[in-house]
Image (cartoon, rainbow, N blue to C red; front, side, top):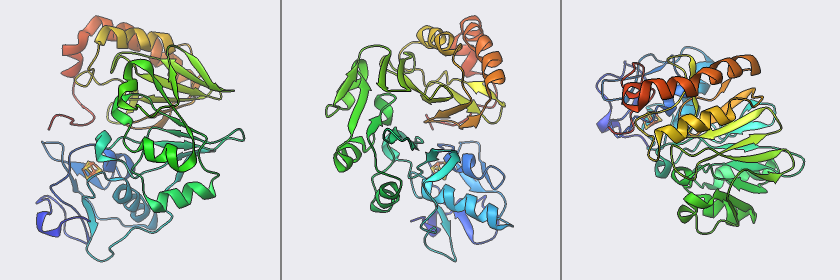
Length: 302
Ligand code: SF4
């Protein structure tokens, strides 16, 4: 629960507030960008109180997603129960409940006739489990890389699901049932694509020839309005990440769903145009200069 005694000084007057335990993960601003702003340290505050039921719902989603439970409402203690899962496009749900173990990474549920996919792990909560039960449970837990493991062991165990990770990040999930060594099909229409760079064992999951789950490798930068990568958080190899972007540039992608950064309906045409430029631009500019560009999307080293 958010701490009233630690409310951020920049919150505007009104029932909603953010406390200063915020870690600046940007998640609240993904859900309620017109209501939540950030200070010079990347920490969030309420810039405007909601005016409509849609804006109030968006702020409740931010509240339920916040990994530090830093968003509060002085007049109502808890979010409505049906805030998450939230359907982003037909069959793909944001799960909210972002975990502090993954620095607030997003996770998703893909509902498919052959069995549902959980992509990266939210916090394990009873309420979310009940909601996932109603959507048919989980057949596969797909981990993009070591940083997004969070409570994957509990989700895998609860649903007796197969848990997937690449061998170069597999020490982070010793309970995994399936360890990939390269590009490999998880199920018909579900391909694990090895894209090293952020970590050595990072993969993307390409689903039904239109959805790309990108972990921490690629995201929609909602401030720059373009597909982007994070230079400061490239732990393994900038060159490998640039090569990885080239390797997935030819996919037909409608939506990009990252763990960190904003999801987005990019559309095949824009995806192809931007990805054709991304890898070469990364090689040309280099990691240091890339990290100095304006509109850094979130502050991981605050
Ligand atoms: S979601 Fe992230 S940025 Fe928003 S208040 Fe919570 S910790 Fe801060």
